[in-house]
Length: 133
Image (cartoon, rainbow, N blue to C red):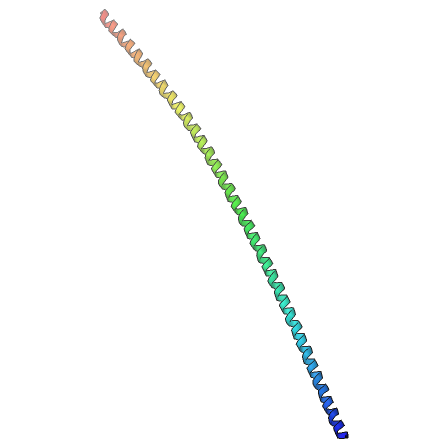
């Protein structure tokens, strides 16, 4: 009976040791599981941050592109307005030039007519003078 009791005690001690080992293994697995869960959670947080940063950057790029496009449009509108102003100025100068040219031509025509009339009168005076002789 003492041998049986000793065998049972040895078996019980052996089982207790095995239980402690298994408990330690379970604790290690639980710790690994916790680390794994934390790693997954951190990875998800990092992915969310990356996604958020990418969205912010995309919005920033779009905003910058819109501002640049607006500047280009404003520049084009200003250039168009300047071209229209230049065209009006050129038309005004052309009209002014035409008026001056017309005036010059008319004054030269008048001079030619006066000279022609004076020339005819002078010719007639010379004829009269010659006829007197």
